[in-house]
Length: 297
Image (cartoon, rainbow, N blue to C red):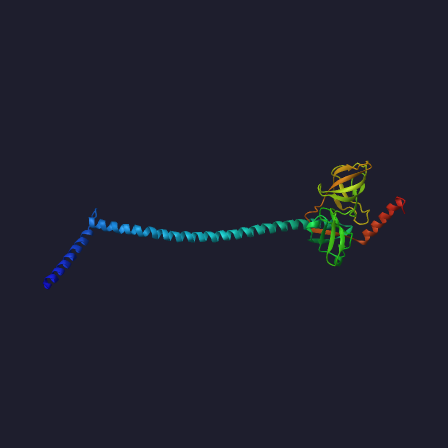
């Protein structure tokens, strides 16, 4: 009995091998249609591949998207850095262009200042509470700066030196609210008209020139400069232009509203008018002659 089962197993094994070889040979033949076992196996394998491949592809796609997102983040970060650098460069270029223009104007102005020695200075401090009153510059006693010296920009007069230290000076602006802040001025025309700058209208942003005779023929746009008769400011410094004439309440004199030639708001590069001894002596002689003509000397 055992021998029979052993032979039976051998016969089944040999039969299976023969069937397998026959199937292999049958499948290798060129034909248009597959047999149903092949179709069944192929469908099962295809279904398994579809079930496995979709999650695998989705998982791989997720990591690809994460990688792309990371690359996009890095590129965005680099672009932002470049934009910030570009913005800083544009700011630096604009600032340097502004400084260059101002310094060119200062140099041109220095060539035309024959009556006094201009000392170039830079504004180093400004109190927000007294923005239109005083500024601090980086020149002082060490460079010969003294109180009451005129301070100008390339556009015109802005004020005078109020006090000095060894290396810095405080400048009082024409726009300062101070009754003692006066400038002897002249309106240039066919007949010069003299007056005094004493005050600043912050709302209208105009200087006030008082003590103008009521019959003076003054028109809008006429140039106003320092007269040199006050003993502080040199003659011929540009102050501004006439904007409007206002008669006083008694009609005896007029007040001129003057649009300043220089801005009191944006100040960075200035010059101090350091008068030479020749100019000082000439001004003294001129004032002496005026006093003689007026009969006061």
